[in-house]
Image 1 (cartoon, helix red, strand yellow):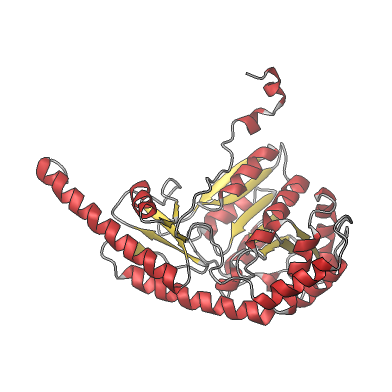
Image 2 (image 1 turned 30 degrees about the horizontal axis):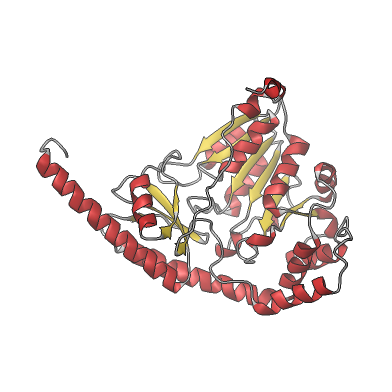
Length: 370
């Protein structure tokens, strides 16, 4: 063993790293990616910019043109915006500026696992608050923890449950605490709900957003935050210089120039989600939870790993989330295109039928099985 491992902080060594094995499947619905690719006109605009730029030069330290376009799109001043390498980097930057030993961070769970990982790395006290048994936000419980915390993180809509939370509930949380509140709106475009209007009322609110989901640019890693300009200025001190490369800057600008095309795709994904949810509900034994995102959480009679493996054997890849609290026998499926959704539904029906047949056979061999 490397004798210098003791120089790594114990709280870091104790963590299990965020990891995801890359596997190929005919239908890949595990990463909440947009099933509708970035329109060609946006790709062409990016390529045009790249062909007329020296790649040996750094990008702008402050991407002023992108910030101006983003300010116009979001309706928020440029000095209240910060852009970076995905909203994950923005989250990490905030935590570097706020969290550390002696601070408390409240996180709603089950939710995006990176929240807990990053909080634990900072050495802050991690304070989870569970959703209710029916996977709704327990606003009263969140408020009780938030009032004693330096930072509270809420994912809205929540990943992996798809649960929505109203601006009225967010207002209550903001009013309950003297700490900062992050509302991660990575999927807000699919929900028709945002806490944006609260930004002018509450100077302790930080919104996180991304180009990865609705904007169909997950491979380019573009995220941004919106906050009171004074908060943004302080958080920016923890951001690395040149954190957004010029390819991503060009793509974000082109996307904002053609936002109507991306918004049309969002409306299509919402239609596909409604059809997928309705079809999934018709499968015997499947419980489907309402979703405001581009994915759907569902529960079946089979253990999560068993259904996951059965689907993967049919070259359908989704996410097994059944080890998370409250999510026994639950899996999360990204809304795919019409063909992908059809293949997924057929695979679920086949897997559940085979699982039921096996259960009957095992019961006949062992009458003690219920």
